[in-house]
Image (cartoon, rainbow, N blue to C red; front, side, top):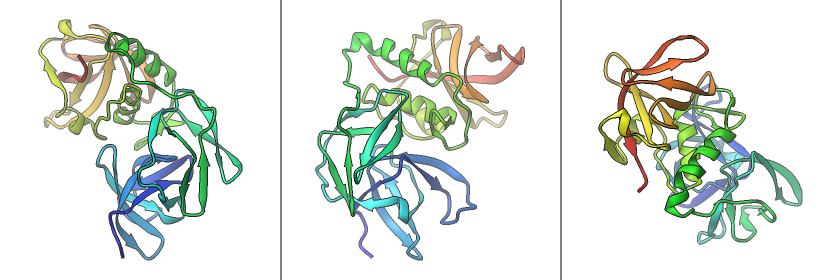
Length: 256
C-alpha cells in the first residue's frame, strides 16, 4: 500500500484513536481539512496517519478521510467563529473554530469542499498577540472537558492551548509534556504575561496539565470545563472547589 500521501478528514471532527478499534481510547481529533500523511492501513477500514501541523499519530476511520488531490492546496487562515458552515459536495456542514480555511475549493477523493464566506485569522501584528490569545481563549469559556478533544463541543487542556495559539499561526505540539519542551522559560510567575503557558506536574514529576496565563494571578484552562481560576507560585486554586488542584512546574513563552 502506498504511504506518505496527503489525506484530510471530510467530516467536521474526526476521532484519532490509539488503536484501530472503535473501543480504543480517543487521543486527539482532526478537524475538516487538516492535512495528515498516510502511514499505514488496517483491514481497509482504518488509516494510521501523522498530522502535518503537529506530528501527532493515530488511527482514523477510513470512511471519514479522503486523499487530497491538490497537495499544494494553500491554507489562508483558520476559522475564527465559534461555529460556521462549510460546503461539502453541495451540502452544508457545521464546522468549529480553528478549522483550516483554504484559498479555494479543495478536492479530496470524491469530495469537493468549499470554505467561501468564512471568517478566518490573519497572523496579527506582534503587538496584538496577547489580545488575540485572550479573545480566542475566552471564546472557549465553559466548553466541556473531553479527553482528546479539540473543539468547543469538548476539549482537553493541551488541545485548548493548541487551538488558541493556532490563531497566531503558531502550531504547538499536541500533548502538554511536549508543549513544555517548546518556547522559552520564564523564571518567575511575577514575570508572566498574558498568553504565557503554565505547566503542572504529578508527584512523580510527569507534566500532565497546561493552561494559559491571563496575568500573574489568573489562568484559563480546561479542567472539567474551560474556566478561569487563581494561580500562585505553588499552583492553581480552583474558584469553584476552593482548594488547590494543580502543582505549578514551569512557565513557557512562545511569542516575542
